[in-house]
Image (cartoon, rainbow over the protein chains, first blue to last red):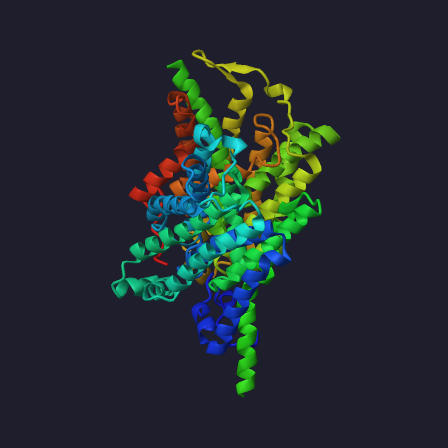
Length: 338
Length: 293
């Protein structure tokens, strides 16, 4: 390595110490241009892809950003975020079916339930750090999975919740193309909220805790409480994604709570670039698109491919797409200044 | 009383599987700081290997009990050299992710070759039937599993406490930074210890084959329960992992028997115990507080 940049791979830490700054340091015009490109891409997406796939990408983008909020900006790897994504999917589905509320209200109910569930799980999980945090969140998510599996009278067990309606004040949203544009504002709000959290004083404290918990504590920050707050916020955002996913598919299966779903969310973040926020969105788009393409071409062993991506990304591409791009851009600018 | 003894016995048998798997996880973690997600997949490979050896080559159970752990141990060593080794100096989370990816690959490889339905594996004839304990009968095969697992645990305990290798492993587990400072070459034991941990998982798999459904997903949910077990016992403590393994087996069996009106209890009780332990002793029952990080 000739670079003098202290990247996470070299420092042996999961999160890039400069993650916040790489983007923040880019000139204003670069940031606005990227934002414009992103917005245009988001508006164009269902014209270039199957609208149903585009809807999935939006939901997974929220999910991945929620995981990155913890992994990249708090230094906590949750391997159990399917608990929040899936719980919200079920609650959203149940509310939409039984109460007949417009879908944004149902999704809000789902996300709030997910956030409420994140309080006890987070309270227990933040007592541990590092690899233990991953194991504890994984275990609690599995508990939620078992409960949903047993509680057949409510969740329909392995049959799944069928016929989740897309009601919205009488507007016909059965076409995925229009549904995409109906949920886009909610997704953008969720992403903006994540961005706001990361760039707030609260977010700065989280990064401080990530990089040096002992010093954060010495400075008088209640570390556990900050971590728990981040965990609950992340659970809420993951819940938004899960609720929209349920309405998008008009169906909720037990898969939404399975540990493979949690793991997929983590690898989406690593592929996009830990601690880059927008990288997570890119990672979600890539993975969802790839899985759709695989299942469309009749390839059955999808786990072989996702597992292979996992192994390759972890071995060779730990900075992820956004992290690598930011590093290249930084080097290029440094060379120009010379 | 008879019922209670029978439930206790069943609990110890399922605890034996947890203990063998947790023991392997704990020695690997102690030496490499790697939490091996693929441990459940290797357990599955052990059982599947025994099944394939019997059905396609006629190799009996007793031979499989030797061949599979050896073969998987070697495979584990190769894996450690090829990939895991490259990530051990980084945050342990990377190896967790790597082994997660390996789990998906191994499961799908077996699934695409043999399908998802369960395959039957006949109990070896010498171990069929049941043993009469006066108050109750108990299947011979289960008695064998319990005895064998206890024997393995005792043997490992003997190696850990009475041999030089064992001292190195224990020292590296308890004081990872200090051990090399004494001039002990920890690195040369890393690969064999990883292989040994995998071999234990394979052994548990072979033992499980006649008792549990052999299918590509048999290790998938089990490994998460074992994670909860090692959180309860304290992953840094080898003894704690084994004790928690047997303990959780007991608690689950009792929960299943005496709270049978609530089928959810036997599946979730391990996680409830984990929650209580996290509240009461966050480092695990036998673990020590990790350095604040």
